[in-house]
Image (cartoon, rainbow, N blue to C red; front, side, top):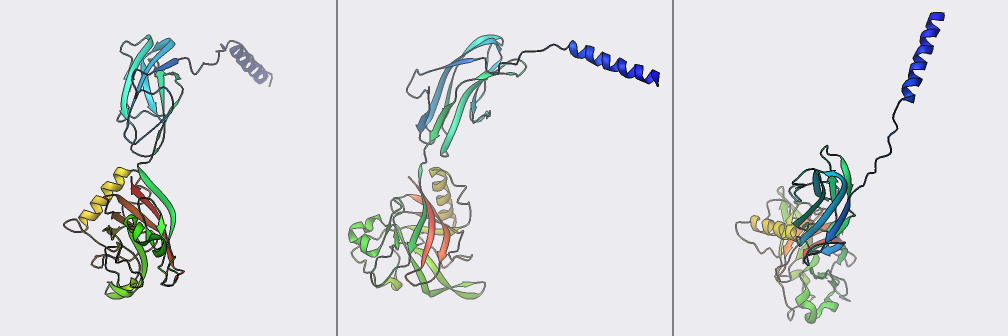
Length: 324
């Protein structure tokens, strides 16, 4: 027992001695560099800026550090992406000062993008970073949320049954009139007469988005003989998803692809139902309607909700993204 106690005391004594010999290192200063941004031209950024998608943005900077630097890199949103922003290497490793420039294109998707200069040493140890420069990319498309498009009413004629895609405004037969008809890109009604064959069964058409250039036998109570009847091309699709389309370029490309590949040549479907479609063409929640207006603007509409029926209380709730 005495022998065991001696061993325990010896271990404790050695541990105490080892602890007393540990060297205490001062806390590492995690940011030792100084970065100065210059503005030798109008596109060079020294502060936060708002730009359009794919605008040119440029950085001119000088970095100084009390310890040798090996790499100086322009980071985007906290990471390196060589395809977007190639890394800078200090040409003569061991330098205490480095100057560089970067010329890149702003992102195509709207949002905020944070850029900063980061320096590291030969062991890839972080030496510090510059202050953030935030580039805000503005959308190059209109985004309209929760538009309520109503079934046409036959008496007061004040239900908002018409849509201007570019402005996102809704019009009734009364508020539109011939004077505003040139602004209208499509209308809405509930088809109770026509039917579609789906899986060998005839079913009612129901909700319809249509171009004002289309024949409208069920809307004879609306006299639009003096109106401008814009031709809008329409096609239902389920892909790409509404959420994935985040730029005007993507909207245009997707609309062109869907409208062109629906048939062998560019179609002019004047109703969302496209009665000859191989798949069920009826409007339901979640379906997308891709369109091109008479003015050449592409867009997409998603169906959020349908209050079905031909009564004047019927309506659809939609979101729209339209190329600027």
